[in-house]
View 1 (tube, one colour):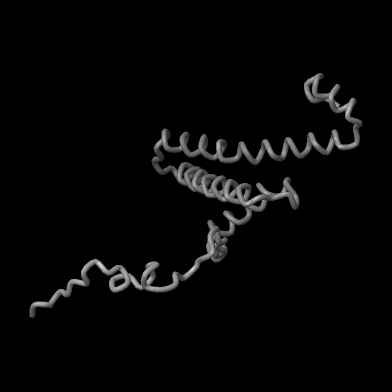
View 2 (cartoon, rainbow, N blue to C red):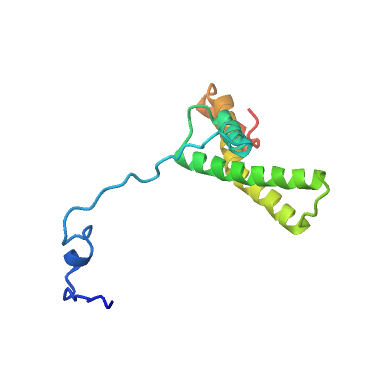
Length: 142
């Protein structure tokens, strides 16, 4: 059987109900946090690592920090799985293992800088402006 195709003459509302001409668009929330299903060992480890990476920041956690922690945790779990394969005597691509380990460290670096800055800020919080300036001149030692 041959289906008949009707041409709508370029009318966007006829072909796509969500278009501007066809009515209101459904709004979706951006950056919606998807909860991790903790039924698998890997998922539990992912959540555990993410929480560990964010813990030193306390309540001062941004969405960027969360994203960075998720990325670092995902990479760390992959590195751990690769180590498990090595321990079982399976062949592992050494180049891939090195890339994953390096990527994990790069993903953690911004979080580590924030933790260091936070610690440095708390040490200098009780100092006067002159003491802080002097500390900066001496390389950050308070």
